Length: 256
Image 1 (spheres, one colour):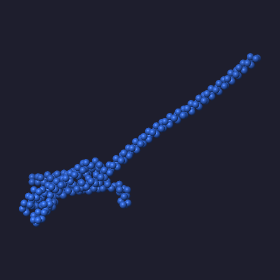
Image 2 (tube, rainbow, N blue to C red):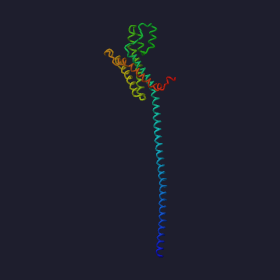
Image 3 (cartoon, helix red, strand yellow):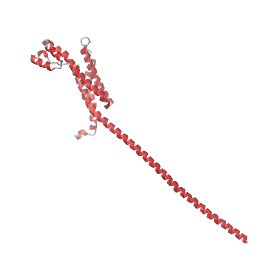
Image 4 (cartoon, rainbow, N blue to C red):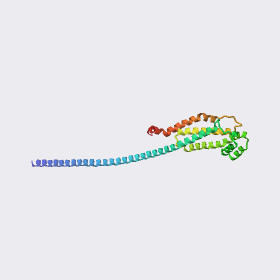
């Protein structure tokens, strides 16, 4: 009987020990889980913050690069527009001078002073101030009254040609140097009309040099006479719209 009692007591002790061990193991597991959860959360939070910081840094860098590109593009566009607005009026003025100067030279309707009916004093003063060379002036003064007009008409053409050619060349060279600042479609119109003027002038010079052996065919002059002024007016409208278009959109005409 006593042995049975001792056995039961021993079993109870063992169960108690197991109960205590189970509690300790459970507590250890709970503690481990708590530590794991706490540490892993902090680790994840740290990693998240690091990645977020890297993302923010990359985003700020991209935004800064984009802002720099936009500022650069805006500055370049502003400078190009400023240069365009400087070049276009000058190119227009030069082409306009070249056109009308050439038309005056190549036109079949020319007006010359009547040297044959000038008084001696008037004739002498006119010759001294005309565009002929010194040797031509001396020759003209030595001619008879009947020969004066034909001599003057034949010889005064060449200084007029030189003057006109310089104006035409100046307009063409200016366009070549600065046409890059014009919009392609506008530059093409400038170039087309400039070439028409140059071709008509070259044709007129050729015929003047060979008028005794060649028929009077003036295709370039006729083309310039027929279409040139219309093209010039169209170009004027385009230039005007380009220079004043934004002003009209903003209603500036009503404000001034």
